[in-house]
Each structure stands twice: as structure tokens, then as C-alpha cells.
Figure 1 (cartoon, one colour):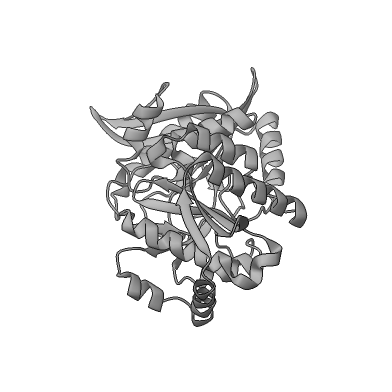
Figure 2 (cartoon, helix red, strand yellow; figure 1 turned 90 degrees about the horizontal axis):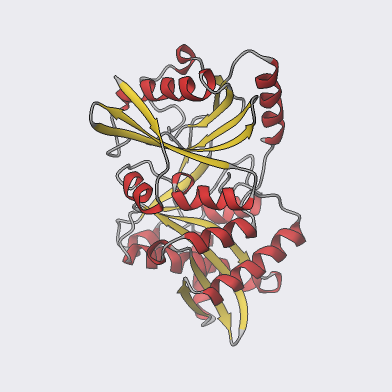
Length: 344
């Protein structure tokens, strides 16, 4: 019988626990949820799924509670259950049933889940029989680059135009470096704020969230910044997150006057090279959706030759009462397209 147990977890304990799962993501990390709590209205709950004495899954949820009346539970890229790339999904139905029982039936909350399942992936979980329905929001779309081939092969897979832009930037002799220190991260944040303001872009990955996340992360998993300079002038920056065997592109900033130098191509390629040398297996481009990603960003990311993927659309479960229907309506209205980088 499946048991679902929620309790407080320390940063070290939760990190060690979720690192055992192949489907771990930044959104299921202790630091990400804590950063959301500190910069917004969310509360955090974490739980484990047990079959006998064995832990078979884990989940981290963000909650917006309405005292005595329920509220919203938002699970992004959970529950975690894969112990290998293929994984055994036979326990997933029991996990989803436990989540609905815990938050919908017992606590009368509206539950929304973005599962870490590829769209169209064969799995034994018929969610409609467990009290779930499609929420009408498409799944996360991005692309992953496998870092196992030699760099020469990875470079040969670049789009021809992308590779030419990279070669041009390399000939300019721009100095680049990677760092997790405060000065480099500060340079990225300054440029990121200007970009969001100037282009009037909406994203859940706010400067405040990234700044808080960086303070919470241990040194070995801090956000890494690649910065390109000409003399003392910052031409552009790229920032990456790290979790499990994966590194993920969070954002890149190129000063408008420096676009002709193709600094974005140079920084992204240098990041790929360094993360491969550090032993990471995958480089995720952090959002690549034909309908939601701005066209310029989409084509820039597509040029690196990564394999595109899309996760299954979000699902929901709720009680048939007026408050749950109201929360559902508000959430659906709020889930309008944002800039396609990591979301809450």
C-alpha cells in the first residue's frame, strides 16, 4: 500500500533525497521553492511516497492557502519517481491518487499538476479514472543537448549560420570567463533588469527570484554566469542553473549595441564546452516553445542542435463546490503565456 507522508525537510536532506531521481528539475529543488516563498505569497510543503519501508517517490508543492476555505496547490515537474532514464511508472497512479486524497479530499484545495512526463509518453496512469482532468494549459517545451559526444562533433551539429556567427565572434578576441561570484552575478542582474524593462517582457523568473535563489544555493550548485567583456565594457552575460546531471540555461543578456558581435553565440558555446568538461550529461535550453518563445530567442536556441521535447499538459483535480471552482477560474486566467523560460 502506498503511503504519502509530508513533513519539514532540511535543505541538505531534501537535496540528497531528490538527487536520487532522474526526473529531478530546478522546480523540485529545495532552494527554488524557498526562493518562491521568500519573494511571493507561496507556502511550501514537501512529501515522500513510501511502499513498505522503501521511499519510491517525492514531491514538492507550492501552496496558496485561504484559511478555513482551502486554496491552491501547484506542483511543477512532480511527483518524482524515475530511478532510471526509462523508469518504472507502475507506482505513478497510486502517487497521483494519494496527492488528490491528501490535498483535495482532506484539505479541500484546488490541485494543479505539471507532471514530468513527455507528451505522448506511454505510461500506465489514466488520470481521468483518478479524479483528474486536463487543465487546458500546454506542457513545458524545451530542448536538451546530450554532452557525451566530443566537442568537435557537437560543433559540427551546429546550424551552419549559427556556427558562422560563433566563428565571427571568436575572431574578435572577446574575453569571456565563467564565475559564480557576486560581481559577475551582479553584472548579469543589471543587464537582465534593463532587458526586461526595455522590451516589456513578462516572466516569472524575476530578478528578485534569481537573486534570492543565488543566495540560497550552496557553492557547488550556485548559478554560474558567463560574462563577455571588451576592456571593461560588459558585452553580454549568460546564466545557468545546475541540478543532478543537468545544467539549464536560465537567461542570456546581450547589450543592444553589441548584437553584431554575436556575443550570445560565443557565451552559450563556451558554457556548453565548460559544462561538458565538468561532467554534466545534459544541457537544457530552458524553454523553447514555437508558440510562446519570442521568435528571435527560439531561433537562437534552435541553432545549437539540441533535441526538442514537450511535457504532458497540466492536469487538475478539485471538489465540485463554489470556492474550488472560483480558485480554478482564477488560476486559469493567471496561466496566460509568459516569456518561455523557467516558470513558477
